[in-house]
Amino acid sequence: MPSSRGFTLIEMIMTIIVGSILVLGIAGFLELGAKGYTDTVARQRIQTQAQFVLEKMSRELRHAVPNSIEVTSTAQEQCVSFYPIEYAGFYAVDEASQTLEFLVGNAPAQYDDLKLMINPSRQADFTDSSIYFTLSGSATTISISSHPLVSSSIANRAYLYKDLVTYCLNFVANSLTRNSIQVGDSVSSGSFSYAAPTLQRGGVVRLSLTLSQNGEQSHFVQDVQVLNVP
Image (cartoon, rainbow, N blue to C red; front, top):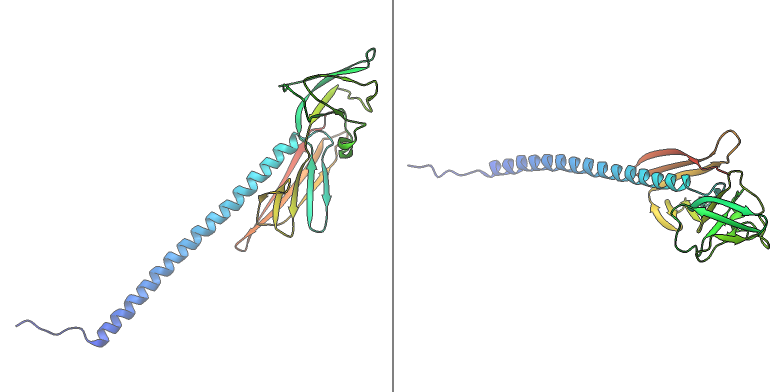
C-alpha cells in the first residue's frame, strides 16, 4: 500500500530558506556582473569621448592661422580660441599699380565673408580692419593704394579665414564646449595653455582634461604643435 506521507511544515520551511539563499546568491552574482559591465561601458565612454575631443581640437589647432591662438580664463571657465585656416596660398604685390594679387589652393567660386591676413602677430590683428583685407566676389586682386600693407611675409604667405572658434572648459557645468555647444561632459577639471612660438620652435598648445564618473578619474594631457609660417 503506497505511503500517503507528505512534507512536514519544518521541511517546507527549510526548503524555502535554502531556496531563498540560493536565489539571493545567484542574484548577487548577477548584480555584480551587471555592475562590472556597466562600469566598463561607462569607462569606455569616457575614454572614447576624451580621445575624440582631443583629436578634434588637435586637428583644428594644427590648422589655425599663425599667431591667432589665445588662452583666456575667468573664475568659471577657461577658453582657447583661434581662427581656422579656410584657404592658404601666396600673394604678390605690384608696386606700380598698387595692387595685391593672391593665389590659394582649391579656390572657391566666391570669397564672400572671407578675410585675408598676412603675417599676423597676435589675435587682436584679426579684428583690426586696418590690418586684414575683406574679400568679396571672385576677385583675387586687391587695391592697396588706400589700404596699404601693414606687414609683409618673408615667404609671401597669405591666409584666408572666417569665424573664430572657441573651446571652453566650464568648471560650473563640468563640461567642454565648442562655440557654446557642448562636446564633452563629466569634465571635473582641466586647463589650456599656450607657449607662443620663438625663433627656435613653433607654438605649443597644451590640452589637459580630467574626466570623472562613478568615483573614477581619467587624466588626459596632449601637446599640440601649431603652425608658425610667416
